[in-house]
Length: 325
Image (cartoon, rainbow, N blue to C red; front, side, top):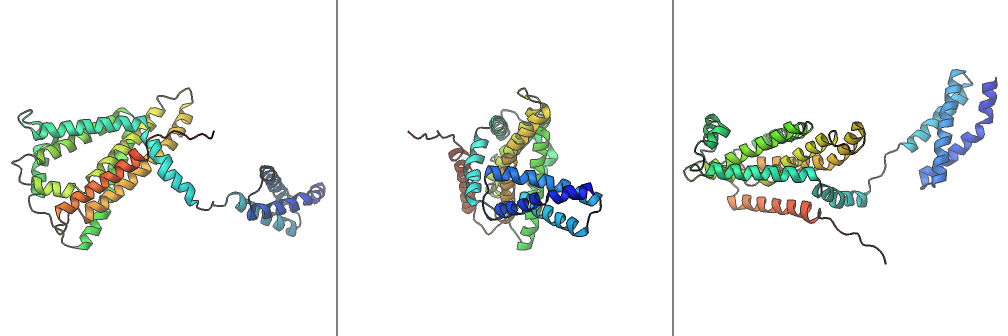
């Protein structure tokens, strides 16, 4: 009976908790009210456990079940979508965080330096006659020439939709490989270097004057190239960010350093996934279409590049905070 008497005396707290629940539901509570609300909630959970354990009257147990459930829903309810907040995050915080990320800067310079160098060497056989064959293998070169030996044409819209699903899966797989490799740092850098060298060799080889399939190749890759290549860089940068976090901890425990780096990597992977998705749609519906003129595909590439420059450079460039006088 002592438990019953204790719970009887606590009815006032239950009624106070009900009133605070209404306050939380209808308007934004003060800090004091939130603290009191949490304290009463924990106490009500303990009272419910006692009531269940000592098999008190069913009406008391049911009342406490309902009260605790109602308070729990208020504490852990989903927040309303704040358009202004998310706009600020997507257009201010994310591009600026990506712009100043040292891992992204390193991967960007590494990828494009090797890509352009590999493309130049591959396009100039007089510098390194067998470079393309050593990087790509003769079988891959033969397959590329066979695949792009005929003018580009799309037979049906259904085929485009099917290829869109394949390209989304394929592009995401590439991004995840770059990201996962970065967790071990050296393998991630190796994957980045390998992809850059291989892609550069492909572009360089197909740009040679004597390659008949080169024109069809560039007609296919031009439109979706900016989004796809940028997404590869972001994925590798995100993986490297995580990989460096357990090596350079800045005095923190490795788990804490990894946790912070994971939060910092989320915008990178989020942007990469969006770009991979957009690249897949372009690659499925625009790049292989024989009905869309090459001038339009070039325009898509120019517009895509402009969007990337605006988002990552213009919006991402650090701004000085304005202080009130």
